[in-house]
Length: 430
Ligand SMILES: [Zn+2]
Image 1 (cartoon, helix red, strand yellow):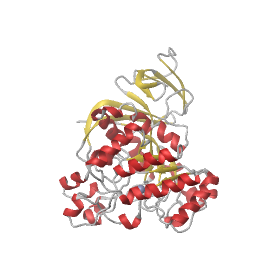
Image 2: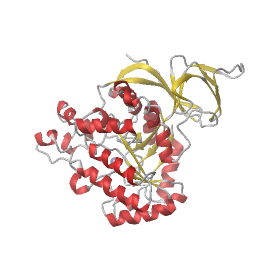
Image 3: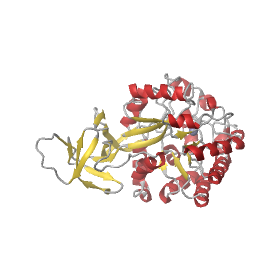
Image 4: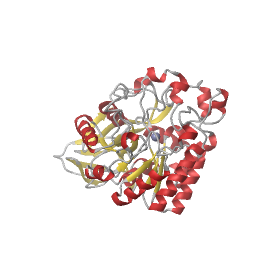
């Protein structure tokens, strides 16, 4: 099959986009050229569309096993495909948590049966994610897992973190850290600021995150292990990561999520404490939002993830205090970033790498490029289409999006995984 007429983007061969034809054979890209004159190969005309390497989202909660009323592997990966995301890294805080080989094998089997896009699965660093006893890193690595995290929380015991580092030196697995000092943050629904104080709530201070970044980062650096900080939300964390990158070159990476780049506690107030603006860490202030965007522009922050965290409308209807933390986002990851780059020119050069080559390199996978020989994961986009995020436009089992009602630019028209079309937009946008 030859895809013709589209504008191809690749961080190396076409960073600004080139009109090229892509020849796909089986799972891989066979060749890319200005024009192929093979009449026997079927052609698909993609006039007016952008062709991107399939996007990579390294922070997704699939909710299976254990919470399939919120989401499952089929619905989550359909949502991913609809968002142009062809590879996700799933978080291990399922029920039960994926903390040992047999559970890892079980979830891999489910993924094989049900997933529409590529799913890599991370495993928990501690048994039952309790932060008390380390899981068997070596055995998990042998089973094929290279990514460890207690996401949802963070190991609080510094000695245990040091032991984890000693093991990571030996195994070389990536530590993905949800940075949170529990006694400063736990259970507090909002940022410590205007919205929390007006509601009479204890808020999470920035230090709940930045202190954890510094502690974990310094320990990782001291032991020489790679650490990736996920869902950064504060200006302090951006500065902390900048410092840590100077201290420990090559060991530190970080991501943030679209909701922190679009919203602040002012939006919590504007929306009268809507629980669709409740996630952990919480929405912060203008200064934080600006620092995060600046961190993406100057390379302090390496990639953008969704922290896709589905919850049902019944769960989210419990009000800001009691509703669970988290918002869906895998479907709006790309259009949100694509919308932002039109407002922030500084992001134009880097944005594609934030969703492709950068997460690929952090995860250590051969993905994120469109060039001959690579696996044919690709995303077709109408770059001019604007759409409003509605509950009905989302494919996830849950619709708890922070972007509901928001107009976004860039419509995913079709998504290919290993050369096969796994998603195609059918209805037209109003
Ligand atoms: Zn987290």
